[in-house]
Image (cartoon, rainbow, N blue to C red; front, top):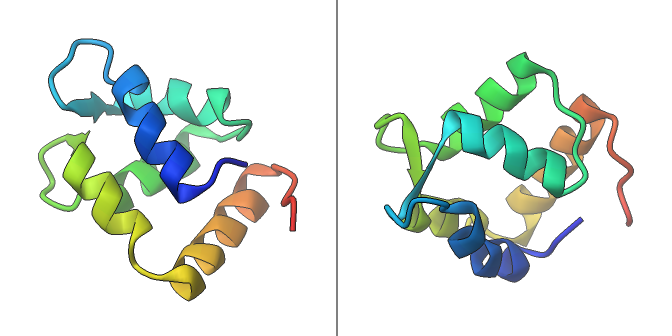
Length: 91
């Protein structure tokens, strides 16, 4: 799975319309491209956790803030996402 830095670098590619944000539909495609196999419910839950301002989109600043929570919480969340989606945890 990608590192936090790689995810931030890739954000520009995920932002297909150049708006500075990713909507729920695009986010589902992002998870698949990162190797996660997510149910619609898990995709919705992860999206909602990252959409800090509840705008219906994830902005770059929201993704960056979520990824900078710190190694401990980030690792726990990554592990939970891996368990929820059946993705292999590389650690």
